[in-house]
Image (cartoon, rainbow, N blue to C red; front, side, top):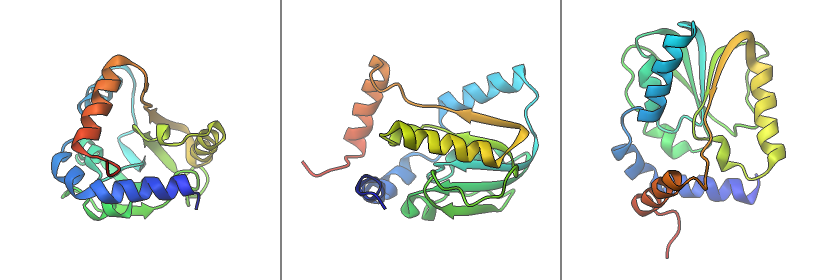
Length: 171
């Protein structure tokens, strides 16, 4: 494991308890975007849905009324341990690095990569994640990907607020 991966795991381990108490509902921006997509496209309503970088699974709440087999994948074991309750379905949980998805070719109908890929600092690692998704996603599958624009003013404000709420390092 690379030292930056270990540092990321340590950071999320440190904040996981507080994060899971405060972040219990789906991310509002993602919820709005999903509604927009549902009005514009015919999205899958069943099959296998993989949430890469799922954290505590809060975005999967939006899919609990649908007929998906849910798979949550995250590097942070601490966040996965504090998974939000999803009464309608069981969720398969994978504690793994997003660059190495332990799934078969063409298995996923829907993949979420929400506010996750920006944690990788190298372009080749980001490409590796996209290659893995291409491998597991069915030809008619659907990917929703979001990435923070770190230097956008409103994003910087959110990042500062998150750092104040969830400090990653001792000062």
